[in-house]
Image 1: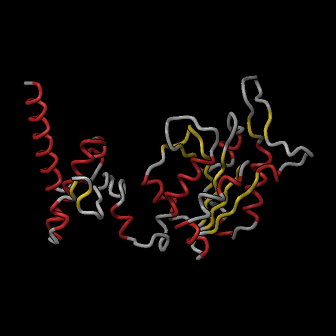
Image 2 (image 1 turned 120 degrees about the horizontal axis):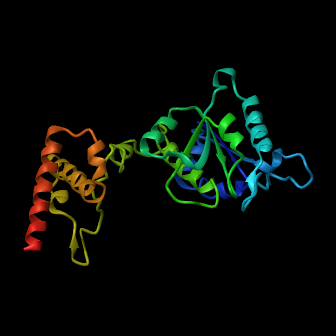
Image 3 (image 1 turned 180 degrees about the horizontal axis):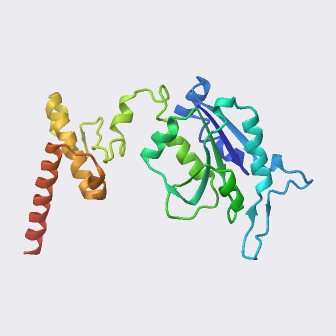
Length: 256
């Protein structure tokens, strides 16, 4: 996969993608990460990439010209069949990012990310250039760089060969629409807190059943709305009903 990032601060991406899994993916040719300084596409001696907003107001707005020209320069080097590549603007007004969207984006061979800054980006970038807008949450950050890192991280780990074990993808929280089961490692007993006996039993059927129950239990306790969206089997639904009944009984006992 090729990824192009338009930003005022390309150095921000050097550390997150310069180590570990993603560094290996880049070194092995699985990913090509290209950073573009928006100021390099300006034409005045001060490399002005922002200006005051029309109509007044606080802050500065990123100008459209350098962003359009940066994307056009990228497109000029793209094969004809890839000309309609996804151009993603990171913005609080975008669609909320999710694991589903990460999977959707991972099926592309090429992605372009535009990182806004200051008070935002000239509206004409959204109207006539971006093909998608993504938000990572209902809060305000200083720029689109951190959101771009989040989205790229989630997308790249879905690419074949990036992770050491493909099974890790299937067991991640949200991969199935639910939260992940608890994980333990050595020591077996730490400060009196012991690893659940079932995980030491060697009985893979019992372990699988326990883990599935923990997935349902944890999701119900922490993100119950996810259960309404998940594609649950008959046994899962029975488990939800049992846990709900048990929780209701516990609450009644506390109140009495």
